[in-house]
Length: 237
Image (cartoon, rainbow, N blue to C red):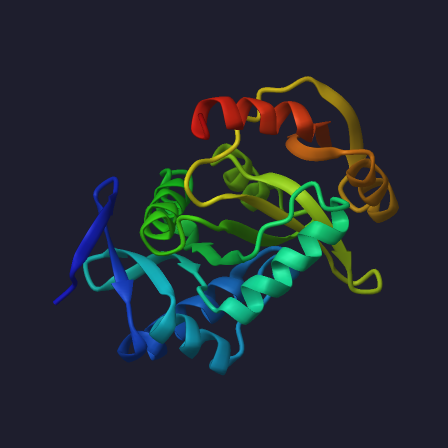
């Protein structure tokens, strides 16, 4: 029996476990193979998926007994520390959490898209993070041209705080926010950088800017000091 923990419209959201490994793996593989750009979903290894299912929080939106979408929180501290180090390096220490726990595995089956399921899954993962890792940061690692996923993160108060290139084949961006509350991204746009201009992203991050939005094939950048000041006044006072 599915144990509902959240809702995504008319769909149920439940927490998967190790026994759901075959169904979740099959859903993710089928979904990735159906993507127009398969590189937009970097696949889990079997061990990675098993670890998140058993030790993290892997959420599935379900239509009856059929998986319609997934999103997960990886609470592995070693990997969370590695992501935190990368963010601190890219932002010259302006964002320097102890842990940045990865939110990963965002996938919605094609027939269920444009029904706000990705957003509902994101909200559910954030709610779980607030219970489990509230005093730390979250981090999404997304292919640089995957505008649909990046937009979901921006809409939930994540900022683009890092970029990593795998020699031109893949460029990834790191999107982060405190688990407790998202940043308010309504700040003046200071610069715009094309998605795969890795050096341009590094330069803007070194200048103290962070990515806050998407417009016409570019990432918009705003002053992180302004964003954090607004965050502090609302959440740390």
